[in-house]
Image (cartoon, rainbow, N blue to C red; front, top):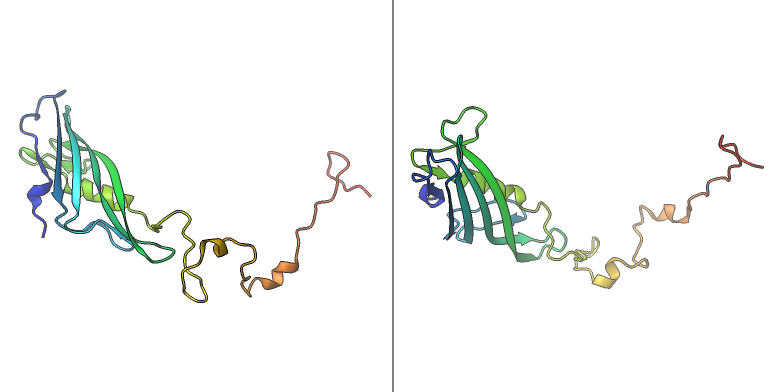
Length: 184
């Protein structure tokens, strides 16, 4: 289980002082993984967090930039790769949370774990690719396609579509007037 204190920010000197602001940068190891499926931020991965805490009448407004490393498996060729990953979020932590408020100030601190987790997980790619022009795997052999063969018109035509190869789009007939009648 993750230590809850790693995500906490002390806001004692900001509480009840609208207009006051504090910025803080820090790095820590992710206490647990974020994400499932093909892309995730692994447990122990370094997370760089730049936080801006602003006191407003309703509570503490938190703006944060998160930078870390994404570990993923390409959705086309199934190779594992790492990539830099950044996400931003902004949340209001209310002094007296209501049903409409999602987060609140607890004593003299705010817990950044829920909004940070939400921002990271929602920004993870659903179908990550190792590079934009990744050709993927050949559906018949399961081998990695060559870049040239993947987009060539001479590539084998799927037999299910072969019967349609002889059909061509018919040209639209010429029209004489604005009513759309066909000339003969």
